[in-house]
Image 1 (cartoon, helix red, strand yellow):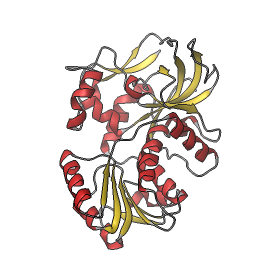
Image 2 (cartoon, one colour):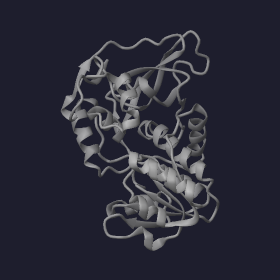
Image 3 (cartoon, one colour):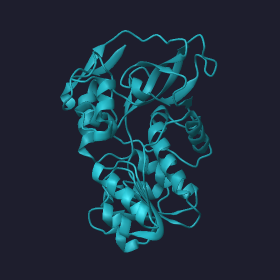
Image 4 (cartoon, helix red, strand yellow):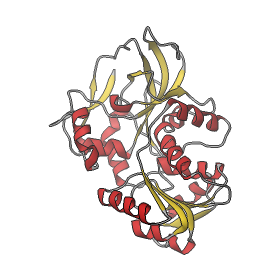
Length: 326
């Protein structure tokens, strides 16, 4: 099979297209022929290994202390068709169309991946393309996790910072699903897109101050770039600040503010569960949510360019690999 491997940490140029043996599923695994896979910011961070300090050692052990393990393959979410199943697998059968998270197996930048069935794998929404399905598991699970923590009520004012990214685009739609008035912070060229998926108001991070629209019941920073204290001050007296990608200094400040005021700052790391992915699938098939796919699409042999594009920071929603065998 064709796969994109990386044998040292560094810039996009460390990615190489190689021919590798097709994996065989273990007794509790499914072999997925991948039709689409995402290229997200997390992949780029792992490739160059710029990781938040509390996860640094753990991920080094997983990926390789001094360099990635031989023929390591990046890629955290995929969609495709199950080609074979292990002897103990009863949830899926060959021919099933699925989407899922690869977890610490990674392996999405390839034509095939073998995953344990305990991972977050679900049937593909019937109304989704392969690209749309591949983009739902991680962005969707993160958005769902945090917004559930906020227990959003109908009519509340919710600010989504980074509303045009993989988490943000789903968060906008989920907040609307829960009945919120949604304020979307992004660049001006993405206003039309976030309005199309449900945002009530758009705010430019370049030229506008979101505090002018305060107070907010919930502020959700999906990318880790919101001004921390400005967000705290822009909250309602009992407001909640959700932070999906914090710096170490912000973790300590969040603990202090949450302990000494009526405002709550939630800094957590979302899990990816089968139950959540099944729920997102149901919402997708009911037309409540979709995923946004960037017009720049790539094949595996364009992996270097794909990473350069994602790192440029101006993607619309999700960037995907589309496999040549579709």
